[in-house]
Image (cartoon, rainbow, N blue to C red):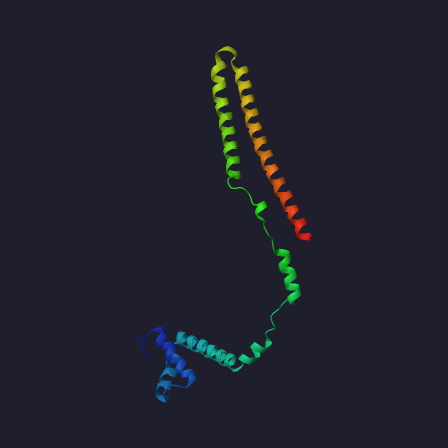
Length: 177
């Protein structure tokens, strides 16, 4: 065996040997090389097993295709019922007006900014006269303003959700009639 040959060339010659495509002289020389090289013998055995599996698979492809079950299919009536359950129609009356979420975010941001400004400015105006009592009062006012802004934002969101729920229930009633 030529030691300068690549792995692919070795495998090609071993495959040709297994398939019986080599001349007797070349087959004899390759057999002696396999006897002397343990790694080459491992490659030979692996290729021999691979070719046997390929031959076995090629000999019985009909059995495999016949064993596959028929694909599952719903009846046309059942399929239509299922499709109707998932269909949703959005009338134009129930479409959300664009920008409503944006306005809610702007109002909430303005309220938060006002609360922060109130918290910053009130302690500096009354610090000289009343000290820490005024600071605590100003902090309380700022907290109340922030809570009021959050409650207003929550109320607007709840109102929006309730409107959407009413719209959805009206739609459901219309589709049932």
